[in-house]
Image (cartoon, rainbow, N blue to C red):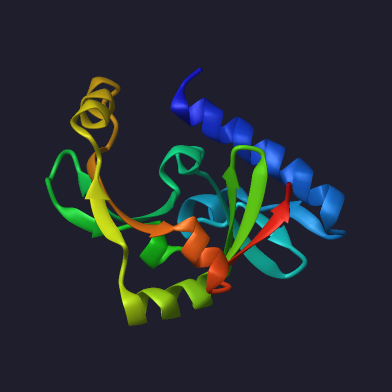
Length: 158
């Protein structure tokens, strides 16, 4: 199964999990998804869904800051800066976490990222092999435990 297909499967699974916990859950429109990085609405709150299973191994959540266009080589701000979601639902294994975007922004503005990383050479090659539009990506990483301790993230479903 491709990474893209796995992401779609994870997103559908998260939406079903959310429907069990919240009354008003609806999928976003295709335009909201593509243009604003909004995957679902919980009531009137716009949410972006992210699957970050690597956090089980690393302890970090990653936020996509910039992408490098394969054709032009130019770096452009990514969903962290351009998205219109008010929060993120992050799936780590089978656990969901809610991350408040405003709290996250305040935290990062005061403390910075724990680290900023690019794609590994292996992932860059995989991206090239499938002719992905992005040649590279910059991620801001934060420790999930710190996010929980500072109230930026909270566990939703175990």
